[in-house]
Length: 378
Image (cartoon, rainbow, N blue to C red; front, top):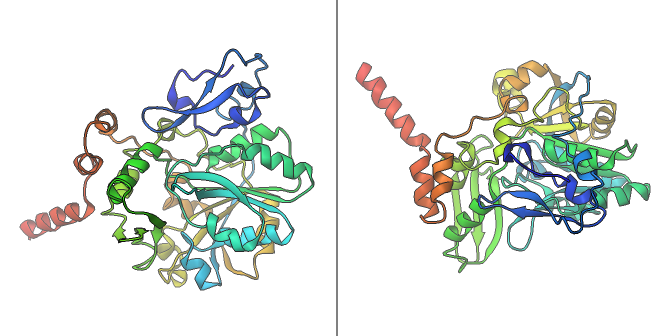
């Protein structure tokens, strides 16, 4: 029986929930807005499958040396609608061309983030773009196994812990399964996301039409949060939007993210995708401010899939160590914001906007203070 004594030892991957043969486990949201397994002891038969598939309790280590590439989708429209260089869309299209299935994160009707699957190219846009909220995996591991046993190709995308959760759940290799994770900063609270949306829509009076965490109208580097409702259009830089400030300043992340067990060179995924931060220092000729992907190939299956999309993309091999110099979240967990506990202690009694402003800093203000200090020195 799986028991979570310390919250930092559960990443919320839902492998235990998916494996339970008696449906004795549910994923229950705690007071901070993160889901953890809860066991119904009356249904539990002590088979220990839940413990056996936990990727934190059963960590898997591979000894491969990955290779890194910069990558840009040649289709500008796809790239502009993607978080970085548009590589995910090319990978998804390749699998769908094989009559396969692609799993990834999307919004449901209430703009909660969930995992789902698509079967045709017209649906790729549903899974495009970053969603900075922990995704509800639901029963997608079971669905993945079903399609693999039907001998269909599957591309499963997610955070590193979700990919390792899937692999632990499956328990064996499948030749037609491809996995793609990301360089993950950490996953924010679903509760804070809901509270933020309430404030953004006047307590849900306005009806949201679409949300884009990474609008690139200004530039890829200075992306903005965009929320369109039936009566309002909101667009604010990630440095000024309050949810993004709380996320990027590590105020609202899951406990396990501050000591992530899945940040490592030797990933178990086939491919790792990320923004290629630092591209201007490595090869500025590729930076047109519309987005560049960092693609890390972890094994032969990843190399084979990258080879298949080379006609759709501009691809150039780069030095891995140089690339991750500007993407430290590849191997290093973020530090917990010193105000996190105080923030969550007050979140039910105080205005969420006021709280985030209180416990985060404005980068614009920091820049003003730096300029003021420089002027005084001069």
